[in-house]
Length: 381
Ligand SMILES: [Zn+2]
Ligand SMILES: [Zn+2]
Image (cartoon, rainbow, N blue to C red; front, top):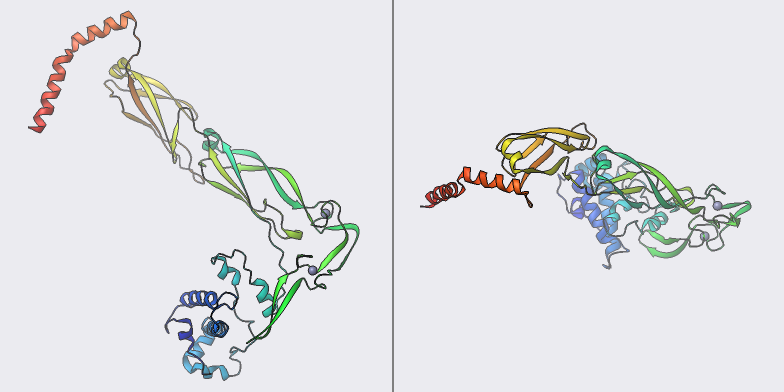
């Protein structure tokens, strides 16, 4: 069968970038993967895709191919594709299939067999997610928390090996020490063994006689741990911290997962927060707003004097520069905003009532409002 043009195989142009070539390869490798596709020609097409990628992803090979076409492969030292020689191809199926909805690639075992690698990877420990509640102030200034985590740890008694004191490692009976069980198929590549990790030994190929009593040979035990977590100043609700290696231990000393801490900041009685700025409302009486006053406003760090000038209207906002919350990982502080609310007295003493009456008389309230509406009416006429 005449060989197809490699660019056509990948569906890319002659001047395609390496990124384009890789993207096309990933897409087509998924599409024609013999274990995914129902297309009877999938294996043949898959092989073509691999071959095309093998050449076009290598600058030197691509250059030769561009110059000489398939003849280039006859040159000695060209390193053209030969069935069974996959050693130069980047088989990152983990990556290819990770966005394919399989999570950990179920094909790693298959390719382990096809390409001569033993698929005996111990899986990394899983991640743990915990939520922690902290106060408004703790979020503003940072804090340290002790978080209790239930997690899988390497067994102390056997240092994660799963072996007892007098135990011996023997070949697994189920797989005769291979670590996997295989099913053999005849394909274009010759014999392909589709292999699955051995259930009994978890791919180790060995089982342990007289395993560690503390962990029954698993190498891991469940432990409750208190982990100190430094929470940085400025953290906000919904932010998370990643604490590397504090998740569950991996199988038989494989690397541990991570611990993720999701932070919830409790609301404050007085302050509200928006990013690094904080907001509060401050009640003022009529006379305070009218005459002006210096008040003491609460801040995160204590109190601050705020001068309210005479004739301040309700809803006026005052800003205390730099009295807000520190931005995480910087030295920038937000501001504090104070909105004054002029409050109408709900209960009055007789004297207050009398004074208000006198005030009303002095103001000539009715006339003033008439003037206001006159001006308003003027705007619309
Ligand atoms: Zn143990
Ligand atoms: Zn086994």
